[in-house]
Image (cartoon, rainbow, N blue to C red; front, side, top):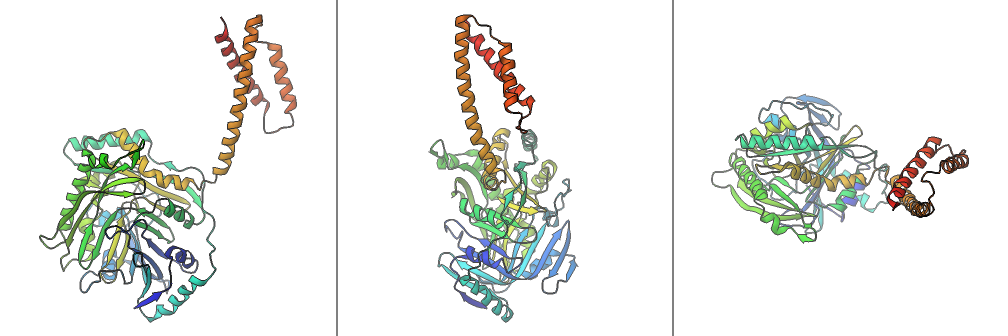
Length: 536
């Protein structure tokens, strides 16, 4: 059932909606609408069921009754929630589920010996089935509610009333409690890159996508961080999954879309700043043999993956190594598409393609084994699939890169890159840091220490200006001593200065006497060096 909406700004509406609804989901398309990217924003409301998988144990929660049951096959639930057979819509005007399928559920489709211990309580899968979905068409500038049945119509009327309400109160302010840190030291990261190159030279693998995790402590409502990110780095696959353990996506990369039985993948490999030293880098990225090799390998892997579930002869590479700009970065993007077989279900699609080849490497199985051996922390939702799975066959998912997830007062995000035979370990670490920078800098703009650090920096500027002036006076003293043969060290004068300063500062409990003594020792040492250099 479709209901016309008066909503004109999906995000402003969502900020109001989440104050009265639990377990909402926002899949927001930002940036320019290009080639079908970024056309729709979806909002999930009226949560009916929640599917979670943690450490291989799956459960299904009925939101209305609060009853939770253990299930044996979470993939069967996904197939039931998002059937691909039968009549399908080529537009997202349908209810469905939103959420993520985390990278570590790869073992449900291919067995890998686990080496990395779980160190968060983040579920591997969290999908929420909604009874009402708002579809905002960015091109037509129209909004439409889709509801399962009459039961949601009255609730939608309440939601529409929010548009005219003055309710704008957000949750508690978001703050970062200290600095964001990388969980992998630089030397360890580079050693792992060297090991991957050895595997490549030995013939084990052609490419491995290697990553590192960053973490920090936080307090407050993540909506404020989301709002800052969407204004700084608008990308096609933004998301705020406002679950018990929230997740934010700022991903630019489509994983899989399914429209009217046609499946499309758009892997991204190859990254460069748009400008370096004032020079545009488009031509440099297009001409980079390394970046092109990374992209072509993954495009071929994705073509093979889609070939397992598509009608024979329908899989085509529609674009190879096309250049796309997302904010301040250029990427190489390829597009592969095919027509799904009639007997294919969503779990079959996942079995053939998950995890996405752009974040594993090629060949996929061996690349994942090497990742499991060398990475220090589980990827969790990172590098999984995030998006919408519709009840009438419309699926839109992104690769879970440039995401942040939150658990027990900690936030986590990851970054990495594709390693090939001619990769340089130091350059790969620099590229990983570059990819992390936009998220890291935005998070750190909320650091609770920022204001006091700025004040310290301001005072330090003044302090060093005073020290500079004192040293200028010391130079003049040195000139006079040399001219008149005055001894370098005037011990009585030094003792007098220290005693006088201690007397003046005796009521200041913040500056201990040892600090005064140490300061004068440094000044004396520098004075002696100046006088030594001033001697003829």
